[in-house]
Length: 159
Image (cartoon, one colour):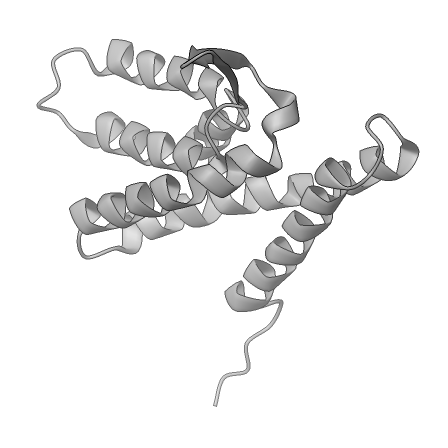
């Protein structure tokens, strides 16, 4: 029987969830620009890189890219409201609706990952006439989300 060496993917995912929790606690509950907040946010950056890596792994190992993309999009939509409520103080855009100002902090990391998934599809699809332009457009769209520009670059590198 062959022994596995190293840390399992499951253990890495649990560690990433823990670092994400630490990041969110630092972002939401700690005073902004404090040493504690900065340290906790820095610890959480492990999560985004890990998510990008496992997104690429999932892309190449899934039996249905369409179902994978749909599940990711549904999760992004469902998680957007809690994300907006948690990070409403960090708005990049403010919408004026019915005489109310509604802050929009951008799209969550899950939306960014969904866009990155579309990037992977684009890079592999030979039927798209101008793949490079489409890919650059997708990277630009991440400017409205969490981990803009960096997430697609990590996904591109892990690809």
